[in-house]
Length: 305
Image 1 (cartoon, rainbow, N blue to C red):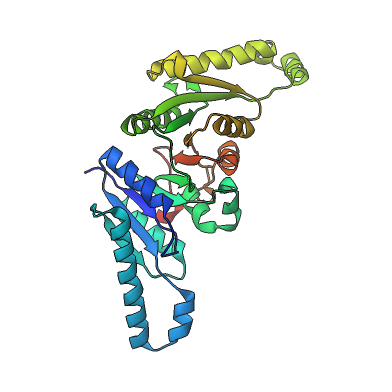
Image 2 (spheres, rainbow, N blue to C red):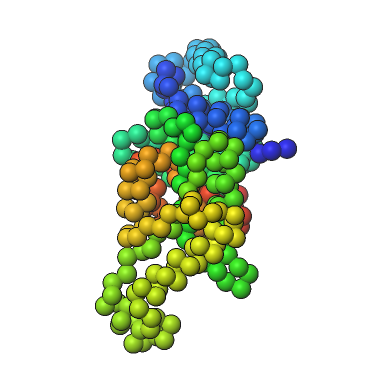
């Protein structure tokens, strides 16, 4: 059975729920089941009813029913599995649901004004990005173009076994997703800024850095073209950017009206410190478009510890 697309709704019953509209599009395109999750817990209601169990049961039941009707209306009658949670600590409930359902992807709504930088103050979303054992898509309020414009960002490395597995996985998922959405796809690689004097100094100490800056850049370009060709991406879909990675990607997305940026993430060695790589973390904090974070196959979530 195909793994599901899970949408986490905003807690406002009257909100537009952009995560759900895009989650519906993704589920339809991928022919995947749709799971819709919302935490209906209301601190104000809990304080109002106090310790009266009958009043509490009646009030929480009304909220649960209201959310079911709202989700049914937003889904337009399409089938979905609905989970209305009632937890003071939302991330604990989400952790249990995600581990039980094992979705392919979790879709959440983030700020439309400042990218994911607000996540500094929203632990739920960073917890999902860093610890959920599945891909996570953070979306803004604006709708996708028709067709949607998708940008894949990879930094492929080649070892004894060929291209690294994460770059291959990110690329294949981007190709499949853009195809199913009938969108346009470009693949990008950023040549990070390197100072000429640093290259010269490194060249004096290490023979592998004895080449010129242009030689190093050309080597990176050649590796990217080789990787792209191996993944079936034609030259006209390739974008070579230059400069600091996060600003370069962010500016390209903004200047070219990119709807969805797809990046990979890695985890550190210590299970208790599962973090995004510094570059990926900075990229998603700057992006003004939607961002899909793809996890490697060997990603180990601390939620199962």
